[in-house]
Image 1 (cartoon, rainbow, N blue to C red):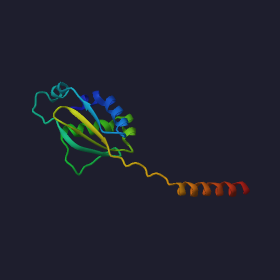
Image 2 (image 1 turned 135 degrees about the horizontal axis):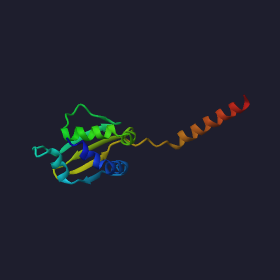
Image 3 (image 1 turned 180 degrees about the vertical axis):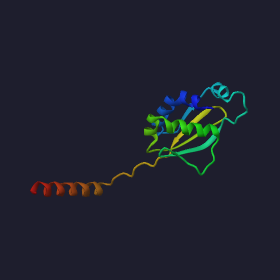
Image 4 (image 1 turned 60 degrees about the vertical axis):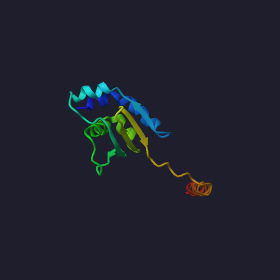
Length: 133
């Protein structure tokens, strides 16, 4: 029902996912797009906590049809599939048709100086033994 509507917003959603590493992103969408897609049926146009972990939907939480279709569109598009593959994302949409995207992907732990020195020493040792062979 909403697949075509989500596909229309997909390029902007991709940009916001890329930016979501720094801060939560919000996309204000046109309510008439969704109302037209609903075909006059009374539907709840909001959802919360649609979680995609490495591109897979969290099945522990029952999702609204609107949220399920968003997840399906994200998973079907090849570009989006590559983009969300390593991310832990959370989507929600309020009654004002604002889609919020949060990137909950943990940051990689920084490598300490001692670990860096140990890796450099190991690499130098490997290069020396390879040169003598």
